[in-house]
Image 1 (cartoon, rainbow, N blue to C red):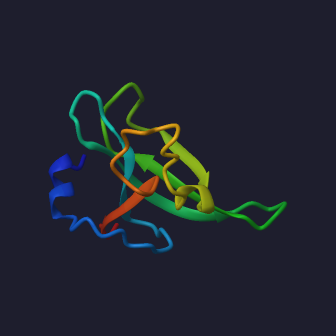
Image 2: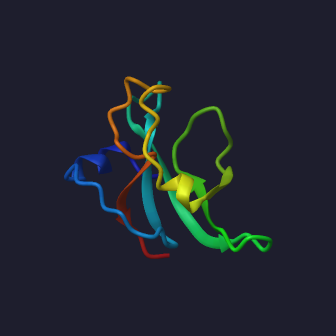
Length: 105
């Protein structure tokens, strides 16, 4: 597990990059228990066979209501999307996910 203190290392400047295996990204929603952003590790990038759309496959690194093995898939464009400020007016982040660091496997 990665402690949420790793977010203190982030300089606040959004780094737009194609997610890659081993990257750690923070989701814009904060964990209600810890007050930290939920962190996820990118497992791989896949391609939807019907359309060629790129998909990000990622795993949670935080403890909450889910199990430790939860894996998610999201289209890259959605992964990169800006936070809907109408739906989430109190969100501090500009983007749904923010790159934090890369950890070699």
